[in-house]
Image 1 (cartoon, rainbow, N blue to C red):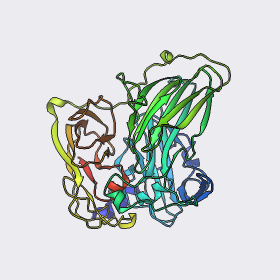
Image 2: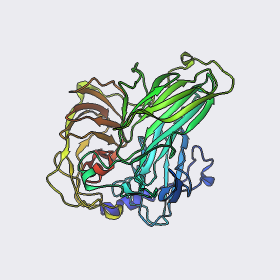
Image 3: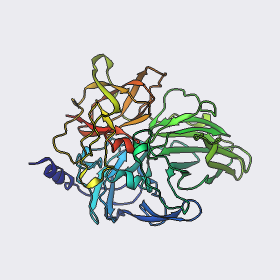
Image 4: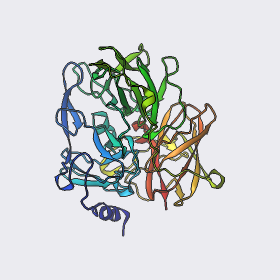
Length: 458
C-alpha cells in the first residue's frame, strides 16, 4: 500500500465521541472554515479567513481527560487541514497534510477526535495553505480546563495577531522573498483578539487568569504587565513549578510565534483602575495591547489564595540514559521550489535543517530527521547558525530545556523553543507518543521555505 493510500485509510477510521464545550457528539457543531470580513482598523477588511463570516475564530474549550469531537468543514476554494498546537494527541488527529492525513478539499469534512491528556492554553491553525490562511485570520485559542476548578474569579484570553494592510485596509501580500530570507514579513497592524487595545472588565480585587497566546506568523512579542499584582503560572500550556521573575519594561518576556503564557492577576481594588498587557514593538514606544479594567465592589482576593496548578501527566526524561541527536538550523544554498501538493508553496527555499531544505509536504521519499524509540529518553541539541530568531516547534511531544550557550533557561515544559541568534540549546524529552511528528520553525515563511521536517517515534 502506498503511503498516501495509508493516510487516506487511517484518516477515515474515526468514530463518534463527545466534544468538550460543544455538548454531545450527535450535536457537535461543525467548525466551518470560511471567508470573512471584519473592521480591523477604519474600513471593513475583506478576504479574511475564520470560523465565522464576521468574527475572529472562537475560543474552543475542552476539559482534561474528556473526549472531544471537532468536525472541521472546508467551505473555501483552497485545501486546508487543522493542527491543534501543543496538544499531545494521537498522530492521526494532528492535522499535518500528507504526514498524518490528506488535505481537506473544498466542501469536505474531517472529524478530529481526541481526548486531551493535559490541561492548559493551546491554539489551532491550518497546516495547509498555512501562510495564506493564517495571515488572513485563521488562528484561534483552545483552552483545556483542569479537572478541578483552580479558583479564579474570571478568565481573559488574549490572541495576539499582526495584519498587513494597505491604506484602504485591504490585505497586502502576506509574504515577501526578502522577508522569508530574513526574519519574516511583518504586519503593520498589531491586534489583540482582532481589536486595537480592547478593554475587558473584571471585578475589582478579583483574581483573573490571563491567557496570552502569540498566534502570529512572524512577530516575536516583548511583553510585560503594568498595574495589579501578577505572577506567571503556566508556560506553553504547562504549570510552572519554579519561581519566575516577572517581566518588566526593561526586561520583557519574549513570546515567539506559537508560544503561550498564563498569568495570575490580582485586579486593583479601585473602580476604573487598569492592568495593561504592554508590548515593546520595534521603532515604537511601549503600548498596551489589551487592558483589564476593575469594575464593581472590591472582593479583596489575594494571589496567595491560589493553589499551584496541578501538574500535567508528562513523563520526565532519564538523562543518565538519554541518547543525543543534533539539529542545525540555518540557510540553504538550494533555492528550488518545495513540492507541497495541494497545500501551496511560496515558490522558493531559503532555510534548512541539518543543511538540507524540506523537499515539501507532498514530496516522495523524504525520511525522518531522527527515529526515536517509544519510552526512551533523548536529548536534542538545537543549533541556530543564522542571525535570525527561530521558534522551533515539535508536534505531539513535550520537552524541557536543559542548557544554552547564551542564557540560563528555566526547566519549563514546552513544545516550542525560541532560539536566539547563534544559540545552541539542549532539550530533553521522553518519546512517548508514536507517529511522525512535524518539527519546524513557527515563523511560517521559514517553515514554508525549507525549515521543516519530522521526527518519527516507533
